[in-house]
Image (tube, rainbow, N blue to C red):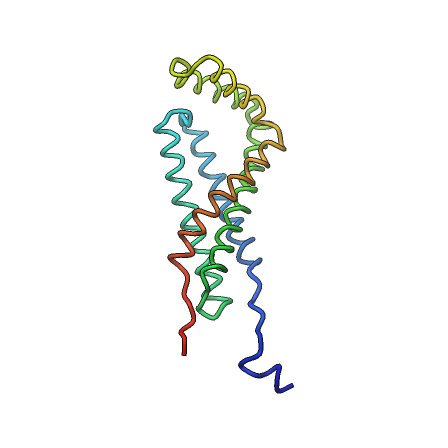
Length: 184
């Protein structure tokens, strides 16, 4: 028993899945609210400025939620300290879970709430970029819109987007929120 109770004994870090699922759910709700607002305001996401605004808002929300998740895990379960790698993993997984939740919302929106939504986006895309693109590139881009309501396409885009955005926001949030144990 002395070995197990020794301060030098290996300790398993506490699980972070509670934090990931809690803040991943918050991230999903934030994504749904943002998407719903853009939808209700009939925001043109096909213009360059529209894409930039959507990216900046989504990126800011993602960094904030990832940082809050890392802080929550660090302060409530990890004894006030968290290494960069663990913080990065938590941030990445939170955004991935949130992205998958938002993907489910997008599927419901496109296929059940407003089946004409993709056609509306396609029209806005043609209006914004149609004259500035070669015909074959425009046709190729429009074919991508036709796959937008497919569940596998939505999930694939959610996973890829969640991994890429989660990695970037996780790197930033982990850099801000990490707190290494003091070396004695």
